[in-house]
Image (cartoon, rainbow, N blue to C red; front, side, top):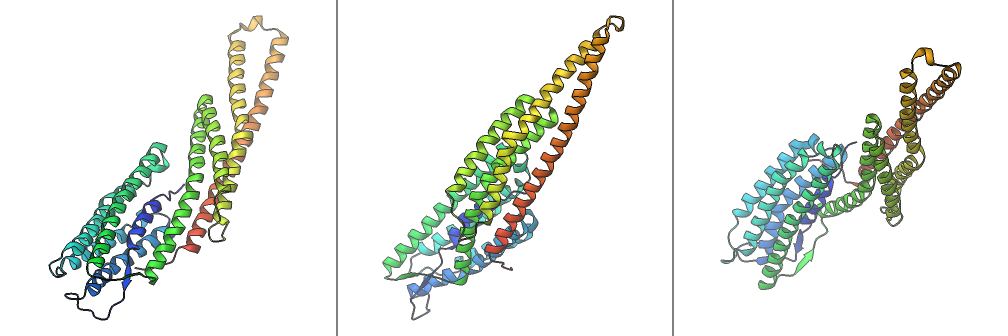
Length: 354
């Protein structure tokens, strides 16, 4: 089951890049015109925006950040180049506040995209193996988002203060890159909210499979009860989640998956537990029968034991068929979800080349 949560972190970075603004200008002298000075910084950061958007698009459409690691490195180079260009700008009439705040912001982007994202990429494989790793993964993303939020607020305050001081009117821009970033942000925010509902049940089903393979009835029952709870909670959450711009496909795919998991928890898995209990009971009968001296066995003892063997063999056949059906249905459930998830991203996230 391939993870998608790396995309969650990206949304905050998108918000950072949406700070792009356009200004009403009549001159382009950055040394004397404050609007031109602000626009020069915006234009410099545009290259960073384009590089990031291309990377984000590639991750969304490929399914794994690790597959496009080279693009992340190119984005880091773009961020570094942006920093150098801003550093080469002069102070505006002795005022370094706007220049410095943007340099600090770009430095934070470089650190987050370099160090924090590298850690997140390395966690991609681990989150499929441990729910604790998933929780750590989410916590890391939240901390990363907090860093970026603080950087955004700092730049925003510096821009407003600079504009007010120099009597510049800021007009929110509607350029193509900003629109694509905003669209992608909305798509990923929605996709992640649905994915988490699916993942919680999917991971729990993995714990169930582990308990079945190890024939641990207690672990199986604990995981089954948790799956029943998570599937019901997820279905309730989906009821309050609107379709994405009229597209119900992802929510429906999640709903079908959760309905399967609920049915699994309430109908099929109790039969698995019942078989393990029956197997345990048969082993006790078998051991007791084999412990008796052969000369002391009566015809009734033998007939009863043979009937127990027949009954247990029938149970084994039923169990094998049930287990096969569960595995096939679960594999189809995951396949249907992954197809719907990828189709949703391909449909709504812009395809951008670097």
